[in-house]
Length: 272
Ligand code: BTN
Image (cartoon, rainbow, N blue to C red; front, side, top):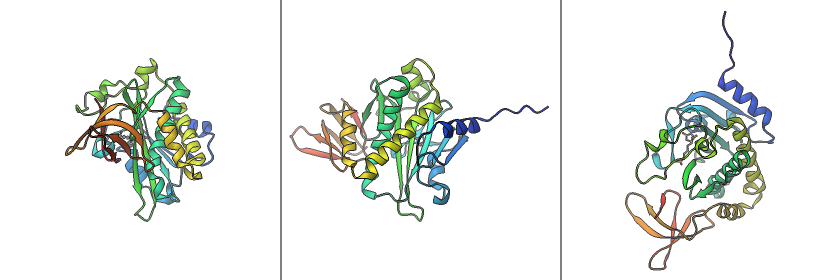
């Protein structure tokens, strides 16, 4: 006799669809047992199959992608999700998508575990100074199918050693919700909270002309300001004090000679 057990994909998708309170985000959900990368999958979906708010989730990724060409370790137990935004998306707002993603993740972690996480520019969510989540924003505005894809990699129910063993010296150490909270958490509930909060920040701020208020909210959730930091892109090393976020989303640093330097999204920041 064949035993019928429901798959991870169908359980996750059914439960998430039932829980979500959103109007637009998560109306179309793709869940996979395994993918090379949810980001690649969402980027490749034609816009007819990936309307605004479409979510792609994989239980594990074999070739997860991080920022600046890095790979992203994505074993079973984490939340690996990409969200399609667009196509009616103003190019001016691209930089703010990473901020609303980080704010949404911080809110969801607080709601589900009561843990207060902090944000690190440009795209990280930290708990106790260690990275628990990274956000990757891909922009497809030149192609026929115009869209933004926001990828969230959240180390949820996994051991941090699985990640830290692979990191290079210049990378922020990783942590996981399991280690900080002391328990596994329900991935579907966590996903529901994140998607609810993304919809909130998207409609109440980003698409209603209040993008600059997102910067203010982001700053309230960050401990970076006033700290000494190093920015290194493999060529130039910039040392100074983190002082603000500019209106275009770049980081402002005060250097030793008192000059102010703008750091763009493509750089990496470490604290001294
Ligand atoms: C970073 O470098 O901090 C960003 C990491 C983003 C990882 C996520 S996991 C889901 C989505 N799919 C990917 O291949 N990457 C993003």
